[in-house]
Image 1 (cartoon, one colour):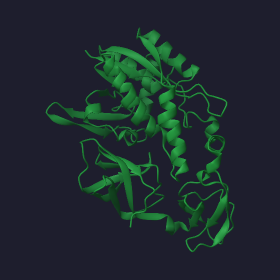
Image 2 (cartoon, rainbow, N blue to C red):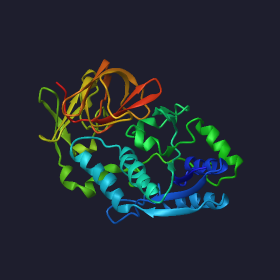
Image 3 (cartoon, rainbow, N blue to C red):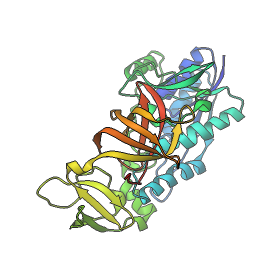
Image 4 (tube, helix red, strand yellow):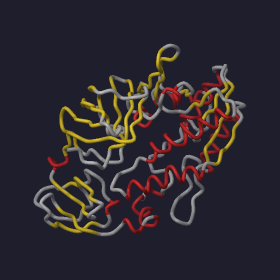
Length: 357
């Protein structure tokens, strides 16, 4: 029997995680990270720790006689998620706040607190597997439900973290999880999932950026690769690589955002072929096994995208050069590129704004 802290959002996944571990005989404590209460600047209460969500987690814990606590991490959330979100958009990148939250809060700050409080490990409701251990290294693998697999957002976990983590749902599909929750009478069994950015009402990130960082929302020219001015943009953070709609320009053929130039305040557009990218660089590299060796991997650049064969070459400055076997569309700076072989994660990093040449 292990003493395990369970990070609970109030949704069905984390609720069932706590209950399954309790049924297995572990000493379980539920914890919700209170991340944000909202303020007058348009940042809403985080949906991950709203009154409704914590009430659901509290009721599940009460039902199964599981101790339950709420930890205040508002300052950490502001620093590691909201400020990161603003910083990435300011640099012409498109951030993924869930990645930052996992990297800097759940699997660093909260895991460290679990250790300080004497817990043997931390569990979450992510759909992934951990295998190995003992004399073998730990492996991070995709969940069996390919539609719910969350290994893409956990690529930053190394051996130290994996040795202390539990992911009981990796072997189940989402429908199975809901059915098991119903069978146990959990109040969260049919709670819908939120797909929005947790701290921005209605996912209206453009309004949020305009209020938080109005200086980065300067209008400027929309140009093609030749430098021809085709129109005017409303502020570079309102656009992302691959975007076609909402450009406000007329052309004989469809045009897409192919580059965001924050130095010259230019939005650069082109046709579909100009979206294709074979070579790019990732920085802030993390590895499951301590380092990523040169070789061929399958590289995934979107949370629910396909992993596509590519050749990886480490560079002297700690970044990785990625060269796809076949060009891919919409390689977006700020998003993650995650390296796989079969269902096993090797690591990944942030797609850099640096153009490889």
